[in-house]
Amino acid sequence: MRLFSIIAAAVALTIAAPSAFADKRAEAFVQSNANSALSALNDRTITAEQREAKFGQYMNQFANMQSIARRVLGVKARSLSDAEFNRYYKIFETYALEVYQVHFDQFRGEAIRVTGSKDDGPQRSTVESVIKSSQTGKDTKVFWDVLLSNDGKTYRVRDVGIELGGSILWLAQEQQAQFVSFLDRNNGDIDKLIGRINVLLADMEARKKDGRGSAFKG
Amino acid sequence: MKPVFHLLPRTLPVFAAMALSGCLTAGPNPDDPYEDFNRQMFAFNDGVDRAIVKPVAQGYRAVTNEPIREGVGNFSSNLGEPLTAVNHVLQGKLPDAGATVSRFLINSTIGLAGIFDPASSIGIQRTKEDFGQTLGSWGVDSGPYLVMPLIGPTNPRDLTGMGGDLALNPLNYPEFENDDAIRAGTAVLWGVDAREGALEATGELDQQIDPYTTVRRLYGRTRAADIGIPYEEPNDASDLTDDELDF
Image (cartoon, rainbow over all chains, first blue to last red; front, side, top):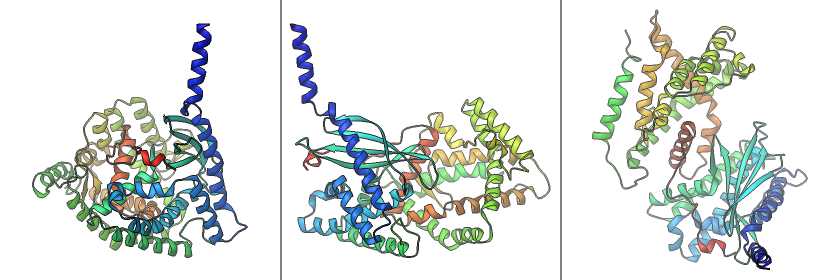
């Protein structure tokens, strides 16, 4: 009788703990949504502008862009007014999507294959996947830092890591290092950061037009 | 006479020590104490690159085709094999040293002075080791990040390693007619070829918010991976906050 009680308690604990099931659900979330976002980049039946809009729509469902936008500012995020944040967020979202497009462009025409995951806490896991680089023809590991919402219903990607030369390049972490460094050297002036992002966006746009940019040309 | 190659092993560490002790003042950033100096050198190197090195690399690409550049790259890499083998030995990787010596012998003969790479075709893949990696594998700490004029991103360990490489490279010792001129020419060819190969990557660098920070992190990450040690960059965004889960 005591044995049954222990088993029942163990089963109850397993069901109650979200992390026990989080990995498989997180894996399915990544498998489905990553491939949707990638397929948006490859959809040649629509115009470049429509592709860009579709990719942005998928990425907003896939990742918590507002949270990423705050995080990459470091401690500076706490001192921003709502008006300042909204002004910054408008341009950040465009920039972040461009950066993701450039990185994902190397996987054009390929599909993500989820290979496993590990729990990093009750509401956080790292999903590991593999995709063939269309440029090198080699398999590249892509890691997804995935969060589960407090209500246990929604998943969102927190960061994407691409294996590069034996180490992992986490895109949001790289952005944070650069944003914080830039703000530190410009007295925390958010408008200077917005100006810098605008310069980069104009350069990216020019690159796309003359064929040096991402998959979105033509 | 050996004006360059025999002096550099002795002068580089001295230069590094002078720079660190006298010319540089540590700043407030503990992750990059010489940041102000480094950024000035970064800007200087960038200016030299835009004015001279990059146009030369673009010209080289314009007047050569892919097979020629591959041959030049193979030739340059082949000349680096003896140094890699010496560093393999110093790191205790004797099988790797043997493989590298085999590569050098095969490619220098059958591969026509290294222009072709038959060794890779038979499964002996290229590895690359330098004395900075060797020092790292012995547990020597990298020290603070530095950007040196014309050399670029480095640190005291890797700067010392550069001097060590010049001293340890067996190909720097044979004497023959015009040996220094030939070595200098080979070094320039290697540099131009390497810069040509990095044209796209540096184009991406221009699209970064703060290219200096990108290069610093990239250098730290790449060297750590080369040595086989974890790369740790403080102030990263890996710590989770409660409000991130509220969506």
